[in-house]
Amino acid sequence: MTDQDTEFTADAAVEHCRRHGVVPTDADATARALGGGVSNHVYEVTWDDGCVVVKRPLPNLAVADDWPADVDRVHNEAAAIRTYESVLAAAGVGARVPGVVCESDDHVIAIECAPTDAPMWKRELLDGRVDAGVAATVGAVLGAVHDATADDPTVRETFSEKRPFDQLRVDPYHRATARRNPDVADAIRTEIDRILATDRALVHGDYSPKNVLVDRAAGTVPWILDFEVAHWGDPAFDTAFMLNHLYIKSIYNHDRHAAYADAATRFWDAYDDAVRWDIERETVTELAVLMLARVDGKSPVEYVEREAVAGALRRVAKRTLRSDTRTLSAFAALARGEAAAL
Picture 1 (tube, rainbow, N blue to C red):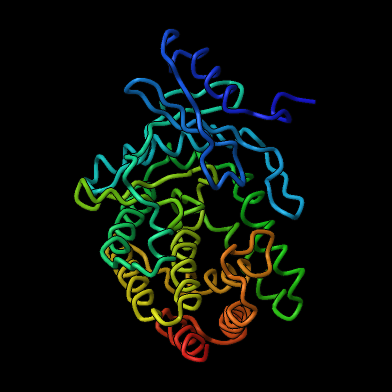
Picture 2: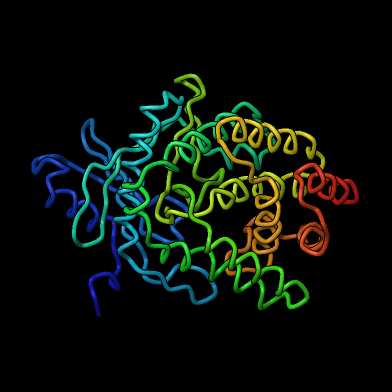
């Protein structure tokens, strides 16, 4: 048994921080588990006026299906945080990332705490509070990072390993979904080949509302989190990943569909204005695969419990994959029709 196979408790997180000089030896520190730890042990460690978030990756993710992943991905996350910090500072974009405080050889990182009063954007969206301004800002942030890193050979070399992306995204989302949906499996496999062969920019890999905190006390400044799937690859994955969450919620909360659809448009327009390329067609195809994956892949969306909603998502995704639907306006029309029928 390796150290990574053992339970990483709250006390162990505090001890780790003491051992690495993050917490002063004479400080009275406590730790509490943070939610959403599907892929990591995550604790908030606080003392006096100090606070860090401590993460240790799980070798097998906490989902119903078997989902192994290499634990050294945590170092990939630390490198991505530093890259985002540099790019956002140079671009002057109004967003933040939590800085790396400590990175250790035993595959644990400690990062800066975000403001305690900054809510998770996902929670607001699920509650029906749709701020299209936040959508536009996170679109502009993503576009700035993609566009800036596309010309950086150092970033390309640093993130050239796609293993975390394959383990945490392609296999559990794309391949698992293809196996469970043989009627569109060929289209999904074609998309797998395309996305793995595309190398253009630094891809976040988990750019979604759950990884955006909104600091309104600072003027609606988003904090971008969770970079363990970062890699050099296809920027359409990130745009599709965010749009997927907005469109899923537009069908889940179908009485507020128009607000989510507007947020999706604002996100896309801000992104498109910030980059030098046109990836709308690629985004739509990947969006369809990801929507189906969040119903039938290894990580289904936890709040979609009604079969009527799951069925609507499947129909939008499969109609897109089987047709010439290659524009976001056409995709939006399919989603609007399904929302109206619920």
